[in-house]
Every structure is written in C-alpha cells, then in structure tokens.
Image 1: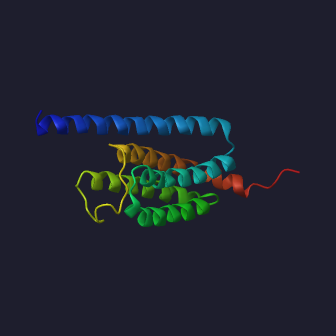
Image 2: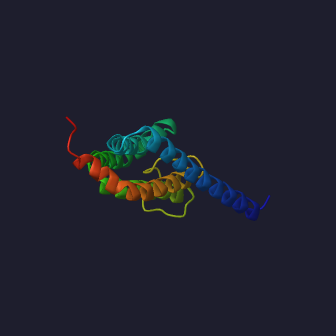
Image 3: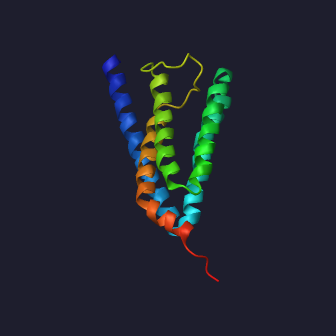
Length: 162
C-alpha cells in the first residue's frame, strides 16, 4: 500500500479520536454536573488535571523513555500547581486544560516528525492519535469551565448555612 493510503488511514484515525474526545467530554460533563455540587465539581476537575498530566509519566515508564523523565516531571509539576490554583480559581482550569491539550498535541506532532523543539527522546512516546483525543477533550472541557465559572465562584462565595 502506498503513502496515500497510509495518510488516509491516519486522517480517519485522527477524526475518530477527536470525536471520541468530544464524546468523552460530553459524558464527563453530564455525569459530574448531575452528581457533584459546584464546589465539588470544580475540585474534581482540578484533581483530574493532575491525573491526566501524570499519564505522561506512566507512558514514560511503560515505553521505557528514561530520557523523558526530566521534562515530563517538570511539566507534571507545573500542571499540579495549576490544578492547586484551580481548586478555587476557575480561570486556572480554563487556562490549564487548553495548555494540557497543547502539550498533548506537541507530543503528537513530535511523534510524527512534524515538530522537533525537543531532542529525540526528551518527550515520551504516546499511542497513535492520543494527543488528538486529549486535545479535543481538554478544549471542550475548558469551554465548559468558562460556562460554569460564575456558578463555581458563587458557590465559594456563598454564606454558609447554619
């Protein structure tokens, strides 16, 4: 099979993963908004940012990318800081999730040789189109956080019930 078929297959996979990312975001939003109060929802999404950032450490371990640990750990620490701020400040999540989506896309582009800001092996390997899935999820979630920012802030500023 030729290069054209390979590219066609890749495009179909990318589209599929982007759609799955959007569907995952819709499902996550539906579940969390139904079962969590605004404060708890915001805290959940802050902690979830830590978990999705830490996936890169799991990938580094799984794929045996010892040279990627330094960069990936530094980035995870940065996302942990953003998440800690995001527990109380919706803006941190509104900015943090798209930053994570861009980090995902950077890995995807690096994996396919389309971008090389880092030396080979400095970024961990990822499964095919994982970066596209995550970016679609992260950007959709950031839009939702923007829509929820007023409710989240109001929940933190509400007077406690006696």
